[in-house]
Length: 379
Ligand SMILES: *Cc1c(COP(=O)(O)O)cnc(C)c1O
Image 1 (cartoon, rainbow, N blue to C red):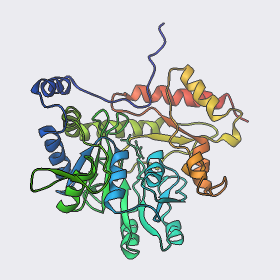
Image 2 (image 1 turned 180 degrees about the horizontal axis):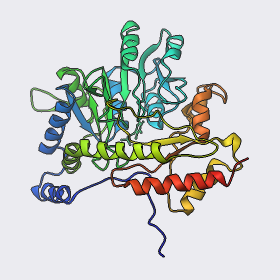
Image 3 (image 1 turned 45 degrees about the vertical axis):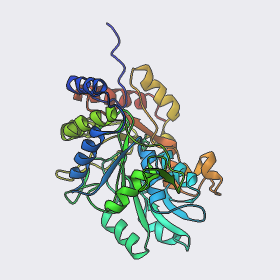
Image 4 (image 1 turned 180 degrees about the vertical axis):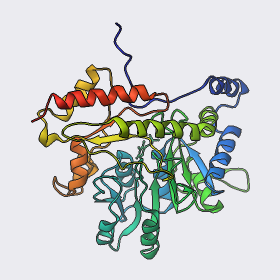
């Protein structure tokens, strides 16, 4: 019997209609930012209750622009969670500001808002919380804290487009919000991202920041007053993103069905820590299914566990390494032991396959493999 095909841990779903539509854009003669970007932005804006949205080349670009839009630079501090992707650390440093890390909740992995207050100082300008699949940051507490302390909020919503807080989609309220359309996310534009802003003035400023910092003068010439980047999304990508946005509800329904199957079938002895259990009507989206291994009760390392899954044709990921202990993070004085929940997750987490092209039989295959590998390595 042929071995089962390798199961990827993330994979985009692109239909033939979208592929044909991309051909039309390529043949149209207008392939970089143009009418399809405008349509994609209009659809995203509608999704975000009419707030202005600007498409850019990645969520990373969106975070950089958001920081610039908020006027954050050298001398400023930005509080963020160390259990997140490198983007947040990198962009804070890139604009010249100082990252201030706090720990996360051990199960939801969201920023521990209870630790934020103590880290706010005279130079603190903004908070960048990352929303985790399966559980949003407490938006009421987050925005109340930010208002009370006059801080900007840049919500890193790269993983959670489609999640709702008390019925309202992420992006439809708050301050600045960033989405990613990388192929591993809930919807894709190959590479791409978006920044949700507060009003037309901010959106105009984003138009400038995402395209060289160029401002058009009344005499038809151009000027730059700020070294802007080159982050405009091409129409080819916007066409894909627009087609994907239409399918977002179906993708999320399939992802949720797969997660429910994981909760039904995932059983190991000793037990792994699972993400927060889904509840009916909780409004959560599921981009990833990340577990924590009970390493102190096992005779194998995380690397060996992942290798054993890979031998069975099951790909996995690590989401995420501890930002404060990266070489860049340590430059700000952080040491092992500073943020125990983040470090425990970074050391023992494994992201299992979850994407809209999977079946429940695929989930069963992963669950059986995890059960067998762990059973064979009990301490
Ligand atoms: C993927 C991701 C990003 C970066 O998205 P890009 O579009 O690849 O720049 C940022 N934050 C989180 C939490 C992510 O998962």
